[in-house]
Amino acid sequence: MARQIFAYILHKDGVADDTALELVEAARRLDASAPVTALVLGTGADLDKVCQEVAATYKEVWKVDNAALSYPNAEVVRKVLVNLIPKGAIALVPHEHFGMDLSPGLSIKLDAAYAPDVVDISALEGDKLTLVRQEYSGQVSTHVACDLSAGAVITIRAGAFAPDESRSAGGTVTDKSPDAGDAGVAGRKFLEIIEAEVGDVDITKSEVLVSVGRGIEDQDNLEMINDLAKAMGADVSCSRPIVDAKWLEKARQVGTSGQTVKPKVYLALGISGSFQHMGGIKGNPFIVAVNKNAKAPIFQAADVGVVADILEFVPELAEKIAEMK
Amino acid sequence: MEILVCVKRVPDTSENEIEINSSGSDIQRDDLVYSVNEWDNYAVEEAIQIRDNVGGSVTVVTVGDDDAEEVLRREMAMGADKGVLLKDDAFEGSDGRGVAAIIKGEVEKGNYDLILTGAQADDGAGQVGGMLAAMLDMPFASLVNRIDVVDDKKINVGREIAGGNQEMNEMSLPCVLSIQTGINEPRYVGIRGIRKVASVEIPVKGAADLGVDAAVIGAANARVKRLDYFVPPAGEGAEMLEGGVDEIIEKLIDMLKSKGGIK
Ligand SMILES: Cc1cc2nc3c(=O)[nH]c(=O)nc-3n(C[C@H](O)[C@H](O)[C@H](O)COP(=O)(O)OP(=O)(O)OC[C@H]3O[C@@H](n4cnc5c(N)ncnc54)[C@H](O)[C@@H]3O)c2cc1C
Ligand SMILES: Nc1ncnc2c1ncn2[C@@H]1O[C@H](COP(=O)(O)O)[C@@H](O)[C@H]1O
Image 1 (cartoon, chains in turn blue, red):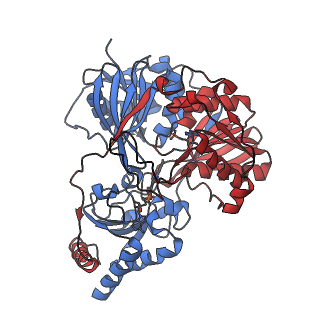
Image 2 (image 1 turned 45 degrees about the horizontal axis):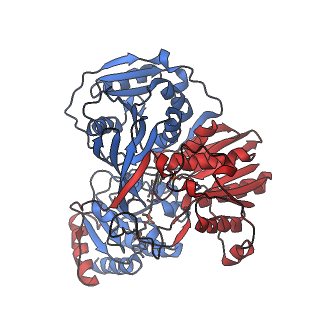
Image 3 (image 1 turned 180 degrees about the vertical axis):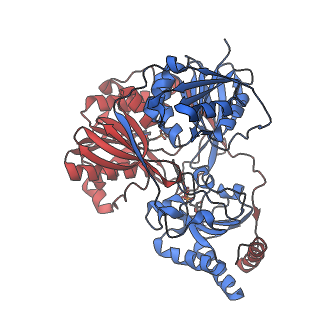
């Protein structure tokens, strides 16, 4: 029997997430002969809009309309998916906060294998799928064998599979609401979204960012970062550990769980370059990385790199720039 | 509240550069500094704070070898009341599902209201908590960055979602949560604190004690197996500036100026 692949479509306000296009590409790379079905869960007119949009890329679109799905509570979604996804199928889910909430438990309930945060697909032989993952925040990569014989839930890193936007599927939308079963769950109830606090600077509007990471080592050393930013006429942003340590406010965090920035120039100081951090940098800025580890992943993403200790390099750079002015 | 926190001993990435051994079968483990997984430390701190507010106890548990005991002691020095080491030759090579099934055995032997894991460990899988919850048929929430205890049956939790926003959920107990960094500020553990708990007995439990399903543990039953480690072929990568510091700074300033980086 042909292998079936399902793609979970994230959407908001009637618009499908960019990952909808990436999952269809991941499915094609996984097994080009497998039929691929988009799963679109939600409610109301927004849901129909998303289904129409997704049908342009997926031949089959399954829609589940249920008031309990007006907000994607992973416990509710999991229950519905267990009723919809047949045994032995492969489910692809984007690896972000919702995918992380949904997928591990989904794999248990489907009694399927679970392969998280996949960045590439190498080979498929029979039921053995060879995937690429990263460990230690991207410092090393691994090949992973995933046994598909009982099906699999695979989460896909955003941006890892470049979509082919030229394809046009002209797909059909099937209403699967009656097959979804009872969407009620006890135990977890969505209450509300609390919006992020606005900080004293809006780094999403900054043209030049001096961004600091865990390499700064100590709160007192932030002074030199401020000096450099001042000399350059830039704003200061940071990676997550700096916010976790409460050294800078959350509004200055760049990344998937922080702000999405679009500067012209981005100076990354003592930042390793995790995908969650890089995911917040858009618009193809000129990236300069300074890191003491020549193998830091940030040097793959940067335009220009300097291998140096920022505690020595930054004060000198700041001084030279200040002198020059 | 009876709280169980799952902790894992991992190479400390802020102390080491991770390198691959010559055959690509593993990372280079000689001279590695190990510590408790960063996320788990936040989970233990949160558990201690909840206990101090509403009473109860905190138990830390790990699946590992004899070396793993040191992370239990570290977390007990932080303030956890008890530690349990789950160790058995049969556990070796288990995948995430196997680890979750082993911990499930410990949960079922106890009477826990709240089970905490870290959001993810060294390999960034973020799977054990969600799997454990599904195996136990308990509610689950991931990436939790706030816990408000409502009463002994209910808590409200904040989940970190995109853009710094927070999703609030009401959870009924018992439940499983995976904890995100930044939820609190984990307390410092000094060498004296660790000495204090150095001789506390830590029970060790194996597959038979826990009643673990033998069909899901060990390397033979792993559905997901690491084949090798490798460094991906370098892409274009950055243009690396070389030379003396003054020379590098001069080049860099020129580049920054031409790109509009200096105003
Ligand atoms: C769900 C989720 C969401 C996340 N969201 C975000 C997010 O929005 N933003 C974010 O940034 N992270 C986010 N993270 C965390 C992310 O995975 C990384 O842990 C984080 O980005 C690492 O920050 P860093 O690069 O500053 O620290 P590290 O990874 O510790 O890197 C520090 C770097 O500094 C270098 N260094 C050390 N000392 C020096 C020195 N003296 N001079 C020069 N270089 C030095 C080291 O070589 C290293 O490369 C998220 C994680 C999860 C699980
Ligand atoms: N061997 C283990 N022993 C105890 N807890 C673990 C173990 N492996 C993972 N965990 C827990 O599960 C969380 C997520 O790990 P992972 O799913 O491996 O990314 C960790 O932060 C720990 O809380």
